[in-house]
Image (cartoon, rainbow, N blue to C red; front, top):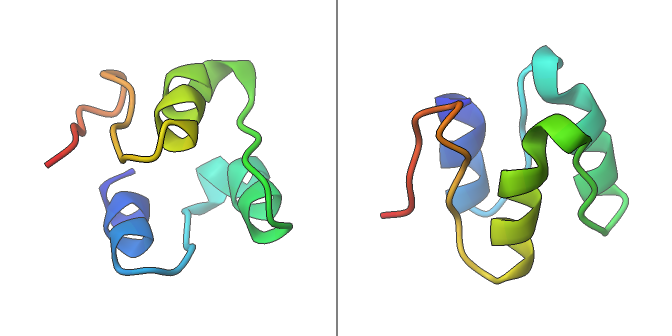
Length: 60
């Protein structure tokens, strides 16, 4: 997920194939992750970047 995290911070969307569902949702102009990424969904909506502990990425 680290690659996708960096891409978001750089101002464009690029997720790996594992997160293709989230990628499509983001590209359509709204946020929608599946239940597995619920933590990331909430944090993105609150206006900052912090992925779930499952991915081991935190806001900086």
